[in-house]
Image (cartoon, rainbow, N blue to C red; front, side, top):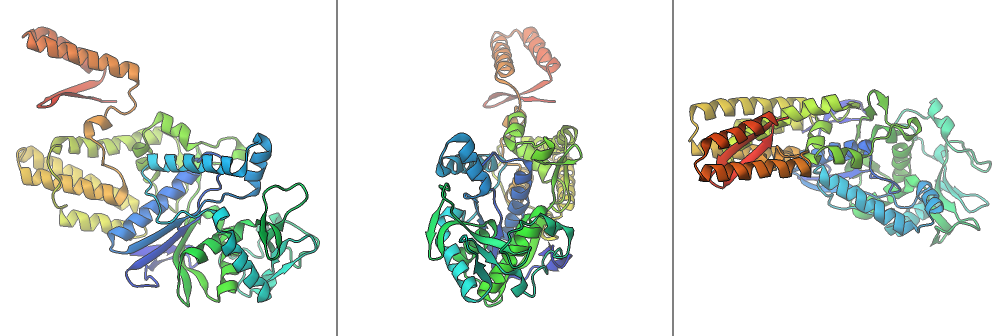
Length: 465
């Protein structure tokens, strides 16, 4: 398997630190608001990675954290009058529901920052004792970036204008030094007791500590792969890598992977631009599997321009898979075609090359339809096709639904009731041998863009557009 390393800026062969095992840590959400399309894109990118690693035979330990103590959460507490846990529990559950809806598999471990204060305390104490961190008069603890000769090697942005947005505190030794611990003031109500004082953690220490707490690592690396959005490379991942390296004496991750931004009609999605598109809103209009297919159809490293015209075109491509499944429904899945399986997995092993993967699927659909046209009653052929579709679902996370139910997605309850009433009337007409009326009802349904099919289990229908 080959993956693109954001630090070396090239594709590298994946060679895990422990043979047969893969450890993956991805920065999860700060739970103070609903998940937006950027969260979905990151979650889907690394869901595909975890699936590809699993399918390649690796035993995967996948960790995705929840940041549940943060300035934004505290601001939300002040706005709403709700407690920390009321806010974070609510939005954690909302995030998980949204991710479930788009088929993101639950990670092996989902640590919360508030449940890892002990690990943060241990790491900060280690950094202080080694001379990499210092405490100022108000009780804050800072990491001394000047003590780390490799600081900036991850992002190459140490001398970039990006550092201008780093906070300036008079007692800091260096403008680039970042907070490991923020001491509590008189009016602060989110505080934790530690050996260096009462306060709360800085953002960067949280991930480093949770990785240390939940992985064993080696004398070279803590984990195999660290992932997240491209906007996290600096300062978050730079600071993570630095403090972990200084605390443990070895590198944090062997490989670094970053997914691209999400744009809405060409603009980078940002609340400051007022065009943030919440996933919950998209899920009200489109089924989660359709959104998953669309959001994964562009390579994870590229920026994604979300617009509904492309989404509808993407759905038509997914429709073809479900039309094939409809032709073989009822068959038990057999073994996937070995050439198809090798080609599909091979595409995903090439840095998650989704374009090639989808082309492999398109080719399989075309060949399968041709074969079914020639041999419509070939049971072994149907089993193989079902096996192919099952492998697609395992590797890419779509194709699982009942095909008839899939084509009813997006039909509102009023129209659904009208369709089912007409189908019932048609059934009664057929019982009475009034085939003229039955044909009239079929034509009426066709005019509504509804296709019906009589099966042994009854009449099923689908929306054609």
